[in-house]
Length: 574
Image 1: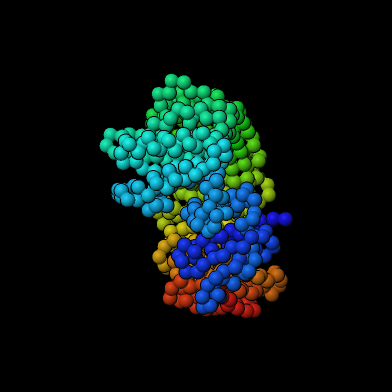
Image 2: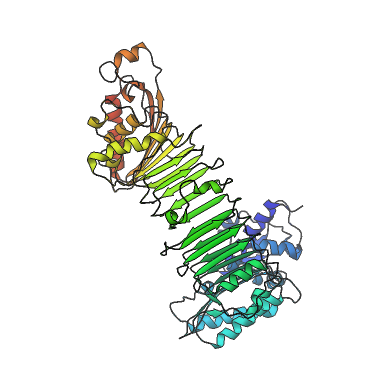
C-alpha cells in the first residue's frame, strides 16, 4: 500500500538523483520493483561520496509504478526538476511527456522582460514546441501555464497555437501571462474560444485584452476567474456572471471599466483591488461569503453592497465609507460576519459594531476615526493609528489577543493622559501586543502616575515591540510596563538591540506586604510591582553589544527595586 510517507521518500529520491545526475557527479542506476516502506536506489559513485547519500540503498521499485502514481510524484516537484526526470530512464521520459501539467515559463530559461536575448528565446520556443509535440492525444490536461513576453508579431501565432493545444486537450486550469513588447502592440487579444471552452474550471489571465466580443456565453463549467492588468468591458463581466456558475472572481488593476455591476447567486468570493478607472461598484450576491474591496488611488469610487446577508469576511481598503453608509450600524446587515478589516478608510469618523458572531476586527490607519463602539464579544482586535476615544470594547467575556500599533499624534504633555485612557478598554485582554516607534512612547513619567490606577490591571501577557534603532532607557521602560500591568505573568520586549523576556511570579497579599507598602503605595487599591514580585526569570537574546548592556541593567534594576525578591535567574533565549 502506497502512503504519504513513501510518496515523500520517492520525491526526495528523484530530486536528489536528478540533481546529481544532471551535474554528472555520480551515476544512478534504478532497478525495477515496487515502493516499499524504505524507498531506496542503487547508486554508483566514488567511495569518498558515499556519505552524501546515506538514505539511498540498493533496492527500489519506482520505475514499475503505474503512470498515474508517477504523475502524482512529478506534480510535487518544481517544474525544472520534473523536466529533468526525462533523462533518468526510458520509463521516466514518457511519464514526463504525458504529465497533465504543462508549464511554459520564460523565467525558468533566464529570460528577463527588460532585456532581449534571442538565444534564450529560441531555446524557450523550441522547448515548448517539443513538449507539445510529445504530449499524447486524447489525454486531458489538468493545468496549462504560459508566461511569455513577445518581441514580434510572428511569435503571437505560435502562442495562439499553444493555447489551441491546451483547449484541444480539454484543459481544466488555464493560466496565461502574455506581454507584447513590440511597438504599438497594446494588450494580447485573448481568443474568444478560451472564454467558450467547456472544460475550463479555473481561468487566470494577466496582461490580456477582453473587449469587443460579438457573442459571449461562457459555459456553466467555469468556477474561478482571476484577472490582473487586463483590459475589458462591462459586457464581459456581466456575461461571465450571468452564464456560468462562477464561485470566485478576482480583479486587480483592470482597465476599461467605469461602472461595475455584479449580480450573482453562485458567487462565494469576490476581490476587487486597485481598479483605477472604476467610478461606481454595485454588488448583489446572495451567497457571497468573502468580500475584499480596495479602491487604491480612487477612494471616491462609490460602493454599494446589497443582499449579502451570508457575508463572513469583509475587508475594505481605501473605501469612502462615510458617503457609502457603512458606519452607524451599517455592518449589522451582515449577521454572520466573523472577520472585519478596515484599512485607510480616511472618511470614517464614527463606527458602531454589534455583530454577535464577530471574532476578529482590524482597524488600520483610519485617520479620521474619533469614536469606536464595539458592543459584542470578539476574540482578536488589531489597531494601528492615532489614539482615539474608545468606549468599553467588549460587553462580556475577554479578548484573547489585542495588537496596538501606536502613532504619537499629540503633544507630549497630552500624550500620556490619552495613552492611559486609550489602554483602559484593553485591560481584559489575555495577551496584549504593543508596537511603537520609540520606547518614549510607552514610558509614562513618574509624575504622571501619582494617584492614578494602572490601565492594564488584568493583562497577563504583554509583548512590546520597539521599532527604533535603540532603547533610550531599558530600566524606565520595564518600570513603566510593570506599573501599567501589575499582574503580568510574562513580559517580552523586542527591539533592534535584542529581545528580553520575563517570567514573573507574585506574592500573595498579606499583613507583611501591607506594612511594607505603607509608605510607597499603601494608599492605593493595588500594590506596585516592587512589593508584589516574588520571583523573576529572565531570558535574553542580544543582537548587538547594547543588548548585553541592557541585560545587565535590567538585572541590577530589578534586584535594587524589589522588596522581597527570592531569585532572578538568567536563561538563554532560544
